[in-house]
Length: 333
Ligand SMILES: NC(=O)c1ccc[n+]([C@@H]2O[C@H](COP(=O)([O-])OP(=O)(O)OC[C@H]3O[C@@H](n4cnc5c(N)ncnc54)[C@H](O)[C@@H]3O)[C@@H](O)[C@H]2O)c1
Image (spheres, rainbow, N blue to C red):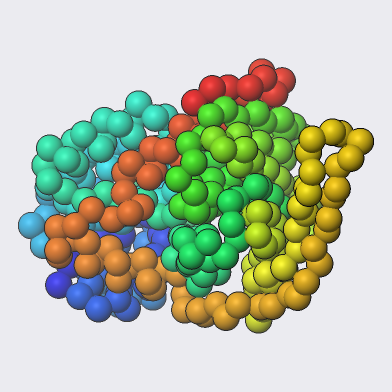
């Protein structure tokens, strides 16, 4: 039984606590938040769990095996560092840290102390992403050409990070999970309209082998859109995450160039075949992720969404931010 302390009971913390508590071989024993009204809410939701506002008491407790850090991004480094130094395994929210240097230090510390770090890249545990990954691995889509995502809605405005650090970790972690192609450089543009933090941004990541990813993130959209197009050499896919059924639609569409000897003799043929909707598992992503965390900790096994996966995403976020602050110049990775 892995005994978990959840640190941070704001917007996302209650979901993490509920899923860890429901997972086999896992139990939430403590909830810690600096804010009294958040702690009171935790007490109503979990009457038998210990409540505290003192993080140091949590990490000093021999009754806690692992902590789930569900606090704002700028606090992750210090909390994870202290938890690891006190011998606790760590589940930490995305994005892993505010800088890649911090992520590197935490990875080194965890390895030295033989502790696990898992970064909550939630989408990797959704039925949709798992099905897409299977199609990529089985070669259904063929060589990947592009990943094009729109992730927009009205709010929630964050106080500490811009829209890139808030929303883009989702798409960046998904592309990172789908391809082994190395990211080469990033360009990004965006604008802030209200609180000095960019509220919309357009990010392009150039990978090896001509794979390109474009990500549109926006807190100022009148409607919520969660649509991703993935184009491959053999098939193309539309993923609409807001659809209850038929989230994925696979199109047997494509373009073939028959002759490239002479530009005037190019024979371009368009294939327009069937569409089908692959079945997608409907289980809650965080439930699967909590179960996987308990397994990794008890079997002493490194998760695929470990600190290194978190670091790859932080590097992409840093590069995107740098490009955005410099009028979209390409930033090498
Ligand atoms: N995986 C996802 O899909 C997803 C979704 C939303 C948020 N998140 C991530 O979750 C994290 C938290 O986001 P949120 O929206 O819940 O933030 P929030 O501001 O709503 O809640 C954070 C809570 O942490 C508490 N807190 C801050 N510092 C603390 C400390 N040192 N000790 C104890 N408590 C402390 C605050 O009092 C607050 O109650 C962020 O990293 C965010 O990126 C992930």
